[in-house]
Image 1: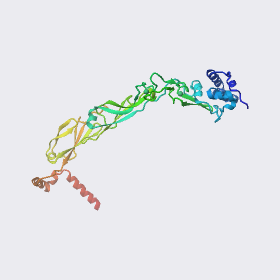
Image 2: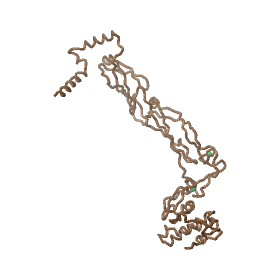
Image 3: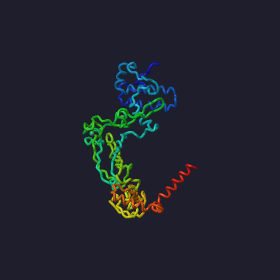
Image 4: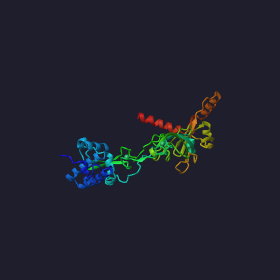
Length: 381
Ligand SMILES: [Zn+2]
Ligand SMILES: [Zn+2]
């Protein structure tokens, strides 16, 4: 089958300019588009022919070759197949179909919109000691990040110049590729979806619109934070490319272990050593809190590991609610480094408690030895 002249296909004169060619193509492409011709084979052929003609005549080089050598000068069917003939420049179709068929395929309404990406979020790990976490603190942190380029105000364009609408997608950021009956929206390869190109990039940021910088930020850590809490600083993340909005900065709190206190929610726990004599006789001891020492009354005959709850001496949570408690566990100490005289006194004490009255002075041992006896009786049956 001999090929029709491309100018004839489009119905334009040999000397037609780009605008006329585009206009003619748009009109014919719509007329013969398979979405409208419902699979009519003859129409499909016409649509293909129109596309092929446009592909050649809209390309300066191909058109020149065609004008000189006719059909022999161009080979639009490389790759073959489908309505597009496989060779149409993506931009040409985006230009035409982006607005005409964009709505059908859900890609409408993007024209002219910048689809530049927001900057990345950042995370900063902040170590605090328990006192800082409980009382809150202002800290200065240094964050290596990207900030808007001040030389071009984030536009990426050299001073005195500006970004221009992308010639391929005309600002849409997307182009429509045709594959068979389907139109596929793709990110514009010329501008990578931004819809704009920068003819003269800013020399400071090389057209990125942002530069690397270590930022110092003063962060107010609220009282009551705990490990795992994070504080979001909106817009303090990396600046976006080409003036796009910045990401957020997340300050991730990690509270270092404390030598005395363990925290569990709003409560604090600590072990308090207690002398054997005070445990037996009762008395007052000083216990630590985050606000300094306070007195704790120890009743007589206190056993080791007894817990004492000091209400309201814990932590006020950052999330509100009541203040937690401080729970002190007393741990009775066995005396060490005893002098001969002290040892003798202990022996005398021990002997005074021995004999028939022993159980009277040892609240745990009766139950314990009864348990041991039962254990051995059970073993021997
Ligand atoms: Zn710049
Ligand atoms: Zn583009």
